[in-house]
Amino acid sequence: MIVQATTSLRQDWCETLPKLTGGIVGLRELERRDAASLHEQLCTPEVTKFISPPPDTVDGFERFISWTQEQRGQGRFACYGIVPHGMETAVGLVHIRRLDQEFRTGELGFALGSAFWGTGLFAECAELLVDFAFDVVEVTRLEARVALPNGRGHSAMRKLGAVQEAVLRRSFVARGQCLDQALWSIVDTDRQDWKRLQRVYIH
Image 1 (cartoon, rainbow, N blue to C red):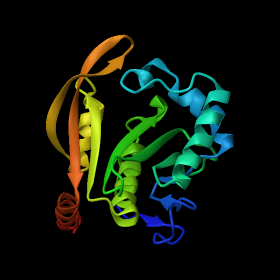
Image 2 (image 1 turned 180 degrees about the vertical axis):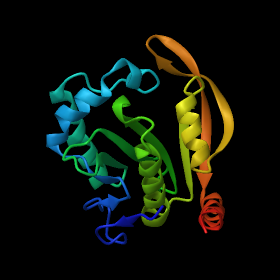
Image 3 (image 1 turned 135 degrees about the vertical axis):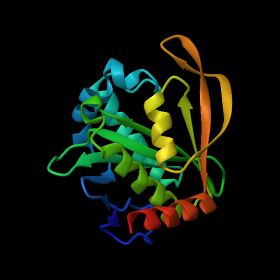
Image 4 (image 1 turned 45 degrees about the vertical axis):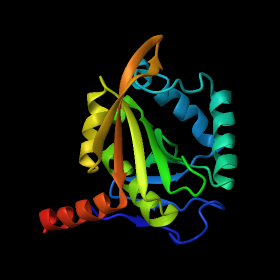
């Protein structure tokens, strides 16, 4: 897969997030106009089963979008809207959150409307975000927590070349039930090796 940024990747991402473009999807900073579509796509039982509860109103999503922009300005959080080619508003989101003072370690998060599951959108979005994290933010380690029953989430992590490091017992509450989570990680050397293998496989 070939991906590219439509603005300079070396710009200060705290000022504005660079747009990222793949073969079937683009990632851009969330905008106020995305609130209604995000509410429609991300507030379904299928999507909320294994994620923290999203805002339950369009106004709530508007406030969330403003919050993500404030956090980006402080260098703490980079949140992208998932916009399939041919569409204008986001149908999901992917983000990276700072876990230490220098932002050498970040945590991945993602949510995508169920109508777009199995289309290849998520795999492309995840690769775009991981490349952004290592190449632009210059993290050395990415982490992701995935509820153990979330088979789709675990499959996505494996496809990114992530390694499961541990099981975090009863670390996530979903619909009043405590669930175990798997802790996945990608470190910079993993990513370099994974990319070399991908080039060998593709060619």
